[in-house]
Length: 209
Image (cartoon, rainbow, N blue to C red; front, side, top):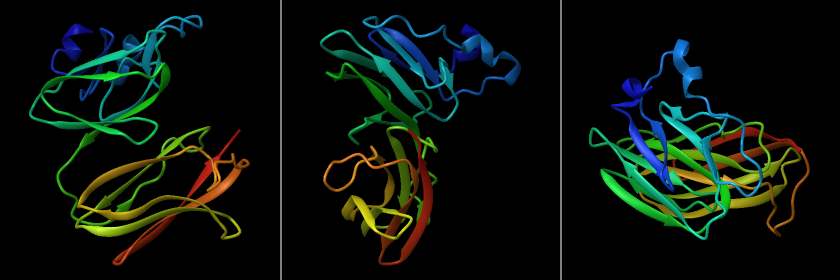
């Protein structure tokens, strides 16, 4: 294991390391799986699926019985990675650094940050199907006023995820399955629509409970 991850980026939660940015042969991937989650009240952190390493992106699940969560990281090859919380707060990971969180549990989304996009795009949400939270990623090649909204299959607006001017770049937004009034919506198929003055795209997502 040590040889495979020796060149990997590292992010450690209260000292427990996870690895990313390295390709692990399929024949060896089981060596990087973690045991079942510990009893309630114990600290735990892992990539979704029970893994200790991912190549390009992944969800990080954590349970933290302490008052604060110390996150330290070491990024190699002059790369930039983005760590996004469930509330949409983003932290840029570059070089060596630390982040302090006060959350007791939750999910963080880790992904590689690439150069300025060359075109508009709206990616498929992840995970899909989902429950209770999903992440939507979109790219802007230039500064644009954007609108990102969720609709039901009857064409009725469920909620607005973003409505503002944003600079060129890659963005992530999370939807927790609630409507404009904060009420949980029912299971089913929903549409999310990204609209700018020069681009419009609609995709489907599935909420399962």
